[in-house]
Image (cartoon, rainbow, N blue to C red; front, top):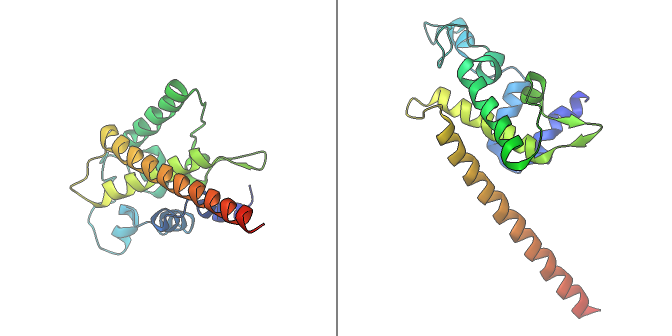
Length: 168
């Protein structure tokens, strides 16, 4: 996929600005990882906040950290076992989004954005724990929001159709 499509993807996936912002920060390599913060002398350690054995880069924080990998593996298994949807959550798909033959995979891309935001907030909020149960609560909440928005939009479309038919 071209860079234009990669930058457009979060906007086509969701209307939530927090996901747009995070993905933009990732794509522009502006996430304040511990490596970045040590260069600015804001922290003493460049090691991963979760794992504490490797340097915290953007790739490590969102993909390579063993604790984060466990999250991605669990989500991948969940998609396959619960929904019978095989999802390839490799480094490229996690960092940039999923494109396949020009098609956008909205559900998978929304899920990836939600998980990356969860990882980000756990990393920078000491009260949040990086665990699958907390993540599933966030995903469930997001599903309810999406259902509500879909329901609201469908009702509005039906309302518009009734008015158009009434006027004709």
